[in-house]
Image 1 (cartoon, rainbow, N blue to C red):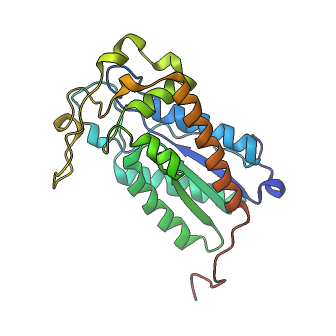
Image 2 (image 1 turned 120 degrees about the vertical axis):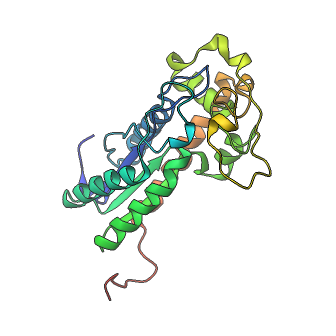
Length: 240
């Protein structure tokens, strides 16, 4: 979509995903496919242009037990987002919505936000995690597991929006329990899951995926619309 600064209030949407194993039943592109499809719909609805999707993320926690994961180091992701943000700023973007569809991208993205905000006084940056756009979206994602991955929600979304990456015959047998309750330490996925799944993809339906995706588009569009006109509560320079 062409950059229309006048209509978009100098705003842009940056989808960030990951390439990683998603159990035996889903393709490795699940996260970046979701980010791209969601942001494209929101861009059309809000008239805020969408930057190209970043298909790699911080997926180190998925281990090397299963093939398909291609992970960036946290510092690499921070640097990439910082440099994208710098160039977006010099292209006129003053409101950057970073839409993240992979849980462990959140910390590096927040670091990049801090760096961009400190350097560009008139730039506002938001990091929005797709599973937590709103209360109803969050409830749907966490319905079958607290430490969810490739679960009912993600499987339903792909059944509805990208069925070509779903192995239908493996969905009923891909469920795996959440073993993280009560743990003190953060363990890699190969020490908490037998197959890379946490949750119950067998519960997923196309209808659930369509409803959840519609909620995500509607609720993220509302966030972007608010952000298009938001002003800082106090008009103080960062440097004073």
